Amino acid sequence: MSTTVVVAAGILIAVLFCVYQFMQPASSQKVKQSEVLTGIVKRGDMNVEVKGYGVLRSDKQKLLTSMSSATIEEIVLKPGALVKPDSVILQMSNPELVLDLELSRQKENQEKANLRQLKLNNIRDLMSEEAAIAQLTASYKSVKMQRIAEEQLVDKGVVSRLAFNATKTDEEQLFERIEIQGKRRAQLLLVHDEAINIQKEQINQAHSNYQTIMNRVDSLTVKAGIEGVLQRLSVELGQSVTAGQALALVGSTNDLVALIQVPQTQAEKVQVGQSAYIDTRADKVKAVVTRISPAVAEGTVTVELAFSDLPPSSARPELNVNGTIFTQTLSSVWYIERPLNVGENSKNFLFKLSPQKTEAIASEVTFGTEAGRYIQIVKGANEGEIFILSDMDSFDPQNKLTIIQ
Image 1 (cartoon, one colour):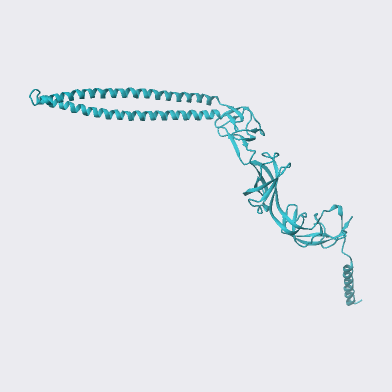
Image 2 (cartoon, rainbow, N blue to C red; image 1 turned 135 degrees about the vertical axis):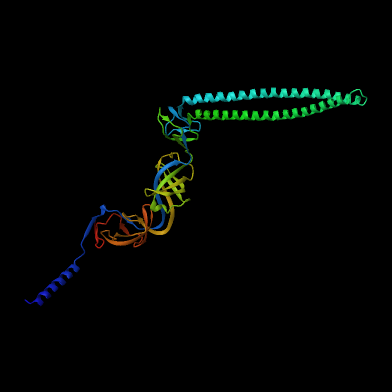
């Protein structure tokens, strides 16, 4: 047998094999209908939602801290208790502080007594000055009368000119002394006023110190300060605390907000003012987006939701809740329940069921916006068509899929 014949025979065998393979039906893939999830393409309006989870927090909170070192003597209320502004939460003790209060009270009383003594001394000094002025005035009047009398007799030679001049000089000196004494009295009054003002400042300082210590003593009785609920207690019975240490956290129950954690990939859709609702498990209540945190933590962004009306009775601080935010409404679009492993704005192959639901053929579908459990279909599907939503990555999209009932 020649080489040419052998080559020709080989080519003929290869051609026959290819023809055989071409004429064979595609390899069969099978799956039970009960083992897959299916969804039908619908057309209509689709509300785009962003969902998240979080907790209710009081928009108005008050952190109670210790104003001084103390020991926890009694725990009156525990977390969860409803409180009013004057509700006592803790009772603390500090004997040294109580002693300081008594000493500061005595100091203030002593300064007040010093003021009374100072006023008495001022009155005594003023009376002495006035007595001196009165004596000088009497002497001045007497010398003046003498000078008037001598003035009439000096020309007659009864009183010598020298004696008259001496009397006149005494009169002038007494007048000057009266003026100086009057100025001294006026200056003394100013000195008295300033001394009283200084003493009053001493009293004010002593009173301020007494009031400060009094406030610290009063703070040993820890009160809520606002109406709400005791959210956290940070100390134990018998514990020693230092100044500035946190004791308890009180939050209002009338202005609760929900802090919802939203995936970072969806946070860009959220805007302040969008409508939402808060699910407390017991109630679903309308809300509105009031704040969006600029920070990203562990792939999520914190969105604050405020109740549109009063919080429901089931709402309380630190309650775990779910939040749904309505970002937009897509009008008259095709959509389907979101298949597994499919994200928004992507292309994927989905198996589309035949009208008889006996087989399925892979079809490329272009997806748009995701809205909760639904996703928009941009291209590749029509209303009423049924697709398999389950994960079908293990099946070849080039071959048909047989559905077993």
